[in-house]
Amino acid sequence: MGLYYDLHTHSTASDGTLPPGELVRCAVQAGVDVLALTDHDTTAGIGVAAEAAQGTRVGLVAGVEVSVTWRGRVIHIVGLHVDPACAELQQGLCEIRNFRAWRAEEIGRRLQKEGIPGAYEGAKAYACGAIIGRTHFARYLVERGYARDLREVFKRYLVRNKPGHVPGQWARLEQALAWIHGAGGLAVIAHPARYGLNPARLRELLGAFAECGGVGLEVVSGSHSRDDYYTMARYARQFDLLASSGSDYHGPDNPWIELGRLPGLPPGCTPIWYSDRWPLTVESPPRFIA
Ligand code: AMP
Ligand code: MN
Ligand code: MN
Ligand code: MN
Image 1 (tube, rainbow, N blue to C red):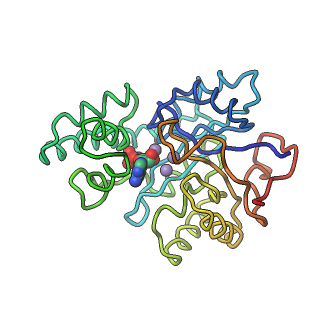
Image 2: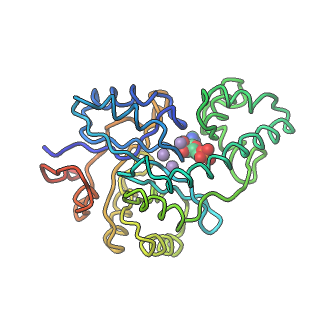
């Protein structure tokens, strides 16, 4: 049997619901061998997660999911095996978090105008002192009965052309990759099928990403369909990118994505953990979709 990899997960350090130590304990339970904690724009959970992983079956990969604006769209870039002590990375993430903090207040103001009071305070309470994301607003709005579930809140309030949407500039693609590389990490495009890019635009993104030294494409993601796995596997091969696999787990209350329940990579992909820059030993070949 191959090792079980889940290279995209969240904790309470961003918009996950499990504290980092708890997430690691769940990964142990779920039979994960290699877990990357990739919180949005922060590495604050890595220390606790690494400690919790000590002496367990889980090898912890220090990661981060960087918010990027590319051609007017938000794209997420996962950095794997980043050194959290890297000043350049931390400086960059700090700038993004400053934008995030302002955006949260602005979302609150816009929702207030829409007749939804207290959303900023509500989201802040859900964030428990960590950075505030749209997911925290969504949880509060569900709690207050403005929508049935998180998806509905996003659709009705938090996406483009909806009242709580706040446009803005996240990191530039080149910047995000420079931070990740400065921290010794490998850069991966997260959930590429989620951006609604047409094939020409996706090719453009993959080209620009590879040009900046990006090496990975998340072929298997909790938010991809089976068709997406195969489509993205083809793109990975065409652009000579290594394939990554991650659930994008946000906690047990998010029923459609489970920790450590990913199918193997489609045949013909080179897994990112086969990279000669991947620090952990690979003991056996990857599993394939049956
Ligand atoms: P933010 O980075 O604060 O703009 O929030 C992005 C996060 O919102 C993503 O990482 C997801 O966790 C969550 N998200 C985005 N779209 C949806 C959706 N349609 N339903 C539920 N959660 C979503
Ligand atoms: Mn999230
Ligand atoms: Mn993402
Ligand atoms: Mn994510």
